[in-house]
Amino acid sequence: MRRKLAAGNWKMNGLLGDLAQLDQLAKAPLPPQIDTLICPPATLIHPAIAQTRGSALAIGAQDCHAQSAGAFTGDISALQLRDLGASAAILGHSERREGHGESDQLVAAKAHAAQAAGLCAIICLGETLAQRQAGDTLQVIGAQFAGSVPATLDPALLVLAYEPVWAIGSGLIPTLPQIAEVHSALRTALEARFGAEAAHTVRLLYGGSVKPDNAAEVFGVADVDGALVGGASLNAQDFSAIVQALAAA
Ligand code: PGA
Image (cartoon, rainbow, N blue to C red; front, side, top):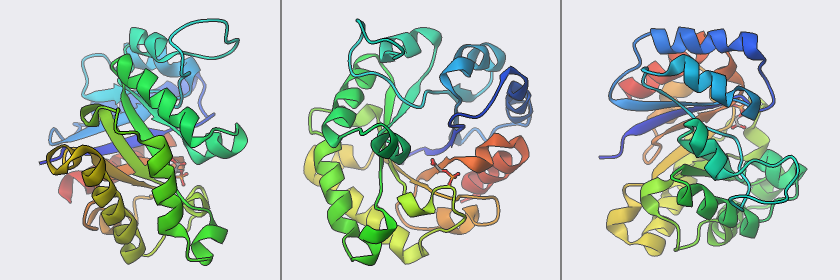
């Protein structure tokens, strides 16, 4: 049985003072049957880990470089993140694919680097609104999967997040059958890539406007093993409600 995962992506939000949100989260008893992860901005990873030490709340990163060290001004390697105590890295988020021109090939290279450092690679995939309206969703997701999730990755350190670009930060979410269709296609793709047994250990998250008021219905969809939460993860009360909904699902 896959352990469910509630992951929060703070994006470029949060100053030292906002770490108080983590205290609130870590103090409320986190449901032991699921995993809970917050990915704050890189500047807060170290203090967040220090602050949550001893709690069940894991801390991750939002990106990493594909190389382990070198002349890459401003970048951070997976090894450096692991050195701080981070346990995961979100990779290939649409805000990086679009805003930083990240290709499937680069996302795959980053995923290898993350796993080599012992981090869980959370690889994001998702279609734009135009692609969905054109009926190309499964084709787009299939192509992203083919390029970003090579067979050389370790399924034991892999999570996929289906994040429709048009649902991120918009308050819109796909219909439940639309989420089910993509998650089922991803499970089938994982089976073809890694074999049935390993494929069934990989968690599939849904991400894009997950809120306390829609979490329970999203978590009821087959093959949804959790969520990648942006805006609602910035508020401990909202994120707690999503965590509790997942634990109850
Ligand atoms: P959102 O972001 O929950 O604010 O829509 C999700 C994400 O980008 O991971």
